[in-house]
Length: 423
RNA sequence: GGAGAAAUGGCAGAGUGGUCGAAUGCGGCAGUCUUGAAAACUGUUGAGGGUCACACCUCCGGGGGUUCGAAUCCCUCUUUCUCCGCCA
Image 1: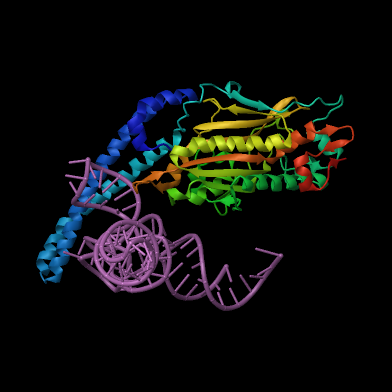
Image 2: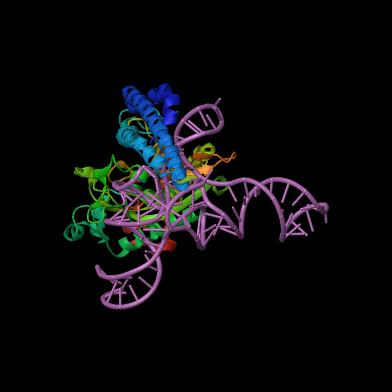
């Protein structure tokens, strides 16, 4: 959520920047500013009414104390009108504040200056590429075929137990999955991220805090009986640790990593592109989250990008890094780098990580602040990234590492899974 | 799930209708003393809105109500604790 004070100050620049998202925010901003003026006028009126009524109450108290009951009762009559009007003003204010909030919720984050205009993922800019694309044997298979051949992932069984998009990992498949989680967590903790385990269900306030609610309501599984949501990413519970917190600037950088399953409804997604592990309703992910001083958040973003690179390099997977264009940029993000691994047998790139700086967009909703040099409270910057999302990394490994004899396990993972071949 | 108790500032803890945004202690910060530190002493120390700055308004778990006036009374929700039941 954007800050009202910033909208007032930078309206013109914001309108230009939001054009990159193909949004004309001008009318929206005008409405907001007008409503805000109305809000503040109403607030002032209410404050004045309350001030009068407070001082009257004090006087009445004094009169009662000194035994001047008749005068006190006379004065009581005066408060009736004030009470009525403060009640009305209060109700008006609530209505205005709700409308204002609703409008603010609808505006996405302002894209960073490096973000290019664009309409879809085809306009994303490749900024880095590394790793040789392996030459596969003639009869190379996509990962869903390999999964069946070596009996390591059972999609049909998942359908039986739950439904499509909930695979069952078996034997070495399950072990490889566990190995990846442990490996990622180790890499992240080595890079200074504190490992943390968080709830997999979150309340409504948390959903609003990180921006999944209200706009992406349909993306999350909702447990109605308790009004809780299954997390679509660890970002939600981990970042919400800091909801309503004021941290000390000396605590920066705050770095957390956590493994969680992620649940996404992905309504309406079907077809070849969602085959196998390409898109699931439940998947595992190891996330990194940072809370930073505004001056250092872009340096932090670069560090996160380098960190994810180092993992993919060690896994020896061919990958590329994209800077998302305005049209593909997430609602809450100011700048996002996507990582894609090349899936050789499918001959396409698969997104395996998304690293973003949200600047103050989430912090404003979260009321996540820090005490600055002058002792003033300032909104902090929040960032997060996947390091990494499991299923597509697994798909990449299965497809890129397949041989006549079976699937070779990347060297870095052998100590974690205890075998070198899936055969 | 049943019965009871409770929720106050960074923490502990007073406050049961009227100068209470809130005693006191601890912690934090600044100062005095000291070569330095500790101790002691003095001062200071919640958040949000609003203002050039004041004034002023709001917040004592959340929401609603009673009252001229609520941290204090009532309703409701949430959470915590104790006892019972159940249980990995």
